[in-house]
Figure (cartoon, rainbow, N blue to C red):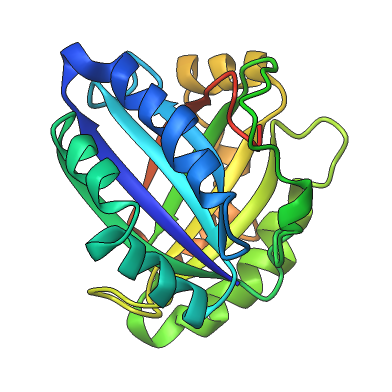
Length: 232
């Protein structure tokens, strides 16, 4: 299973048109075949980063399905739609991802993915992207799963990991880790933003401390799923 991760810089006046293009175009048109499904459509929450930024994640069955999808976009039934979409955004940054061995999301039952735009409550996500040291990448993946992911299994954890990825292709293949984490306790996020992390949570033996031996660069996005996003 492959996952196409896209970050869209949308033209502000066309944010509603851009969302409608995915809800009424991309999502149902993908459902016309068994090659791909849109999973997430999420806005970068206002006040937390660049304005009018949208993150989408599309599941693709395999390499052959990816080729067929690319041909649909280049010269098939999705070509006109893509040209119209480009008029609604400034640019897009895309990555093709594969799941980490311990990712909760490994496969997708396409027949169970909603494609009719049904609505639900909005959900907040924290999307973390890390760049482990080149010689520490495999160790980082193992310890992130064994230590960090397991720490989130506690009943009062703020986050739940929904998916964990690394790029299949890109400028740094094999050196990037992306976590899609649902925020289950928004009040804890507010506390995190308002206070400094206590020393005991940064002491030797904690993930905050020990992970610095494996990486010291990462970025976080605060995302809000749309009301119709198939996964939320």
